[in-house]
Image (tube, rainbow, N blue to C red):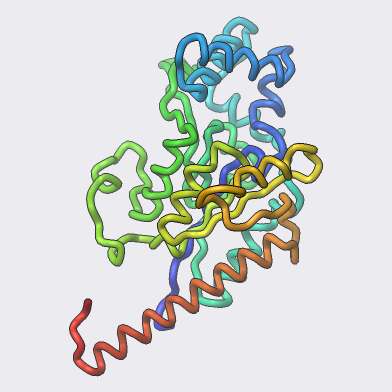
Amino acid sequence: MDKEITFAIAYDFDGTLSNHNMQEYDFIPKLGLTAEEFWKESSIIGTRQNADHILSYMYLMIRKAQAADLPIRREDFVNNGKKITLFPGVETWFDRINSFGKSIGINVEHYIISSGLKEIIEGCSINGKFKKVFASSFMYDVNGVACWPAQAINYTTKTQYLFRINKGALDESENSTVNRYIPDEQRTIPFNRMLFIGDGSTDIPCFRVMNNLGGHSIAVYDDKNPNGKNRVRDICASGKRASLIFKTDYSENSPIEHAVKSILTKAVSEAEILELIQKTREEFGIAPD
């Protein structure tokens, strides 16, 4: 090809790159609660108040932290992220995929689209590997203490961020670009050069968007979780959902690595064919479609 192309890989976080919800590594234990107790209470609040369940858990985090006299500044959440453990191979995954992409003429960009907290992700060991982290986050008062949600990303709003990547509208506070009609050929990263990787029911809308618009999708499961395989099987069994299923093993030469490399190679072939078509039309003076 005459020029390098860009390919975007977007990931859910909890259950996709790490094996627990990110609040469970450090924040919830400091409250003196089990994960089950915290999430049960959050669910009850959401149901009772007819509230979005992401807003419910964020509200409960603030309320419980205040009751326990637990500091909740941005840096405290970032420190929580240092306790996150990742699935096998994740630490080196991004460099390996980037290196392979470069070898075949692709610039690979990595993104997070998560209902978890951006501030906690900022503290984890792989934070610097992403072009952009789209995740729920807090506003902070004059004392630097979390006081109100700034972003709350649930299972349906996740899809907005696929379009932001597609159109290059990466600033969450700027909506004109993501809402404006842009012809497919003028978009920053076409959907056939995008891949979404997720693990749960909250990722179904993203799977469907990717498949409906010519993108790629992978559902992953933790084989140490007795329900993990059944969950992704149910997710993929009906409708236009995830096309591929793999274990959450991102080690070198793992099945998911081979699959992603194949997807990247396919993207190069498609771009080469398109380039040849365009050159042929120019050579014979055929007007663009």
